[in-house]
Amino acid sequence: MPFPYRDLRDFLDDLRTQGDLVKIEEPIDVSREKNELAALQSHVAGVDGPCLWLENLAGYNTPDIPLVLNVFGSRRRMAAALGAKTELEAKLKLSAILNDPGSWLDPTIVNRSAAPCKEIVIKGSDIDLRTQIPHVWFGDERQSYPNCDITASKDPITGELNASTYRYGLMGVDPDGKPYSEELQKSYMTAYAWWNPIYNDLGVHYSKAVKLGKPLDVAIAYVLDPTLFAIGGGPSILMGTHKWDKYALTGAVRGKPLELVKCEDSDLYVPASAEYILEGQIEVPPREEPDGPHGNFLGYYDPAFILPLIRINTITRRRKPIWYNVYEMWPPFDHGYVGVTFVAVEILAELKRKLPQVKDVVVHGGTWLPFVVVQLDCDREEKPFHWFGRHVIHAVWSAAGRFPRMMKYVVVVGPDIDPYNLTDVLIAMVTRTQPKRDFMFNEYGGALVLDPSAPRGPQGNTLITEQVGIDATIKVPEVHQEFAKVARPSREEMERIAKKVERYLKK
Image 1 (cartoon, rainbow, N blue to C red):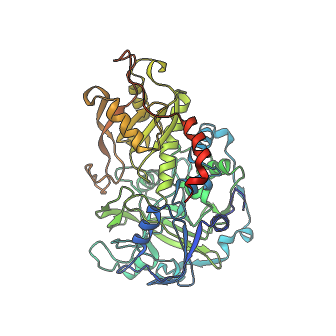
Image 2: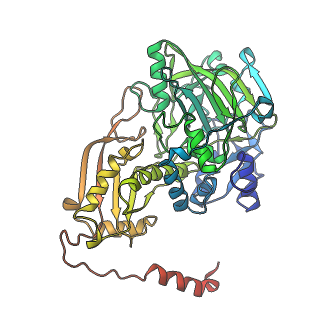
Image 3: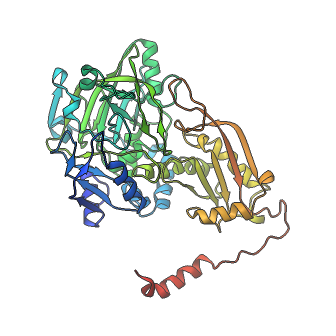
């Protein structure tokens, strides 16, 4: 199935054709007490393994609904979801589109009869999240977290749309292992709306709703076209940039507009090809509950957070749905590659506008890890001015978007260093820097929300961290008149010899 994909099913068909989707017939336990999903996800991501299709599941509340795992578990599959062959190609494509909102495509609005997500409708007192939404557990998490979504909400004052990915918790047991009330289990989820203090766009909307004394309408679409899911969890864009927010950005990346359908209970719109839609309201006055522990994208369990509750009023879904879930854990892991790509894209898009010498930006760690390598297309005396590496570090930390200001470690290297190869990067750091001269420190940088080493705010999230920038370019002419010649063959020589001996070295 050629790009763009209509839905996740198209993408899975493509992976199956390439031998990159495997059906696991062995029984896999997904229960809270004895789950095997964390170990399975860690193993398959660690060996650069395929996407998995699971049907034989123990401890599963919806046995007729297959579970998909590890959809985005490689840089290659992440690029494919964005219509590219390589990560660099995907980043350059996305950077150009981000910098040109005029190219973004308005979605097409379809009638509900043409929307697969409307085949089944459940409302009001008939809703029971315990049986109507698949529950799977990873590791030591108390709640089951359905995470593969895009959430639509509107600014209660300006009416501006935000369409992004957020975490929600199905309310089984609390952080102490005690069951929540039947009312909460049936109709409510915890919502990761960081509103006190404000940290994400959903938090902005909810904070305004609290001040107005009105609940906030939200619509959560689960199991999506892979391009939409990737972009929903990817680049931050300024609210109001486009009427249709990331729906329009996704349309531009796909080269074809998304198909949206109007919600049952509000004037919000959701992707017509989604597997599930949950419509509800984050309640006002704030009704909050503790949530946790859960794995985070830096590889640790978070303590309990105090989070607002969303009441689900309507569920619509496909007649025979599939379910996709993800887990944040010690990297690498499935959708961590969304972070690898889009943290880099946010920085690359901004730097490309101001600094044409920037060739590539690479995030390491298999997730939204705040360790970024910036590769220049020049070094030595070819740099545009003295200490140019320092200028690039400042440009990263001051770039627009959510993630650049949170980069705890920024390393700048020249064109002979492969930014994807950590050995290359470490050699440049060791042989081309002096720690006092070439390391820059910032005491009050922005922290990733879940950094366990940073001080925590009142909701349990982290806001401030220390940062270091490392200028690993060659200091000619700043310090040296000459610098040692590198003892390595050129990339062209390596490519020629690789082709020459390829047939001898195949496994």
